[in-house]
Length: 373
Image 1 (cartoon, rainbow, N blue to C red):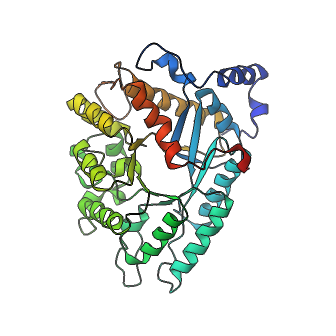
Image 2: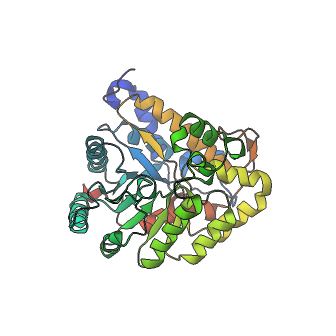
Image 3: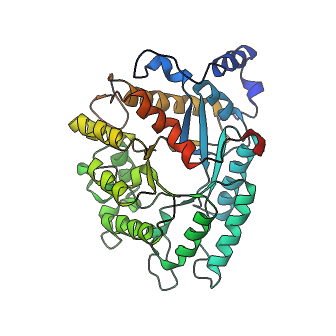
């Protein structure tokens, strides 16, 4: 596998010049239509709120200027300590390389959960991350699905031990992001799953297929724990990643947003679930995006590492274009998650601008500042 170390080594001068011209196009798209088209894609400023760019190479972010994308770049505490520190180091590297393009989000270790001073350790750790530029903190599904206390019980996100940590996050003006639980498909038999990607994943990794593990917390257990945590911490600004694990129902998502006024949901890695619903009731999905246009943010859950920057960029760009077609036009397309074609929603510009940029700028109002580096 070819390693790409420097953008200058790989891409000809003509391409860089073309990208520079493309990125200089005015931010405001002057179009007589109330809707964007595919031709507007390269001209509209956008933010991918759910990115994992973990390399010490500016190639991917530089290429993405062509698409007019900025990023909320997340480091998730999962796996072994060395990889976790590496993810955080590279997240801050990207931020220092160009603070106008990426906003860093950190996470915190939980292996020390049973320590008497766990809360103090975690708050001190988060203060270090804030000093490095972190504007948000992400909690992951290991809380509720993997982490166990010394008694052997699974630790849920509403455990009282987390409350002072969440309060500190709120006091510091940071956003709390949560990937808690899994899609409802995770608890269903393979033949009842709604998307091809979920069916393929859980067939390949049965240890993560909760339908096969009825002794573990149910789907509703995971959702209820998250809701109890938010009810106890009303001052927390919260983003429910992956449509807050309510991806299967616009009605459930609407009820969640009604219940928690400080909550927002991100579409990352769940666009296929939205498309599954819009195949069956397109008007309901359009109505949901229209009514809650101030509470939904765009993202992909893209992953970029040190290998093959150009290939990774091209794959992500294809996804960005599919999503743009779905949200902005009424065109029909095939998507990897579904076996049948899906028609686009054709959302108006005012809704799309909030989805792709304005809502995220409001939530992370200290971010993308060139003077921060």
